[in-house]
Length: 119
Image 1 (tube, rainbow, N blue to C red):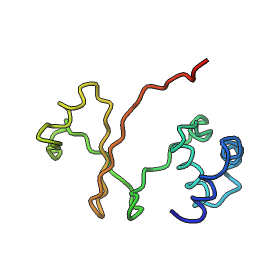
Image 2: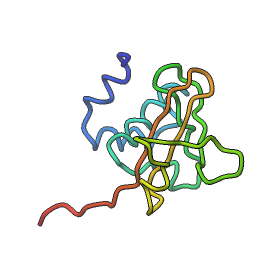
Image 3: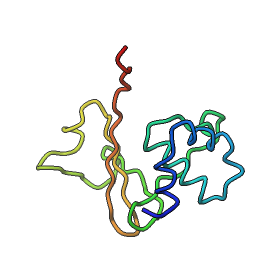
Image 4: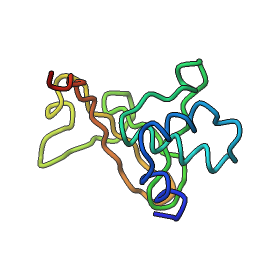
C-alpha cells in the first residue's frame, strides 16, 4: 500500500465522502484511490450515482485491469474449488470471479446482503 492509499484509509467517512463529491479536483490516480477506498468501506460512489461508469477493477499485484470470468458461459474455463464447480458452491449466483490476464491473480467477490445497523 502506498502513502496516498494509507492517507485515505486513515480519513473519516465524512472526509472521504466530501472528497468524492469533488473528484474532478483530484488527479486521475487520486480519483482511483478515493473510489477504491469508497468501495472498500462499502460507501456509495457519487460518480456512480450520477451515471458515471465505475472504474475498472485492478489487479492488486500488477494493476492490470481484471476480467470477469463467467463460469457458465460457453468456452469459459471450468472453475473448481475443493473439487466442486463454483456454481455448485454458489447456487444463488452471488459469487463473482475476476482474473488478471497479466499475472494470473484471481479475485473472488461476493454479493452480501446489506445489514441494517442495530437500533
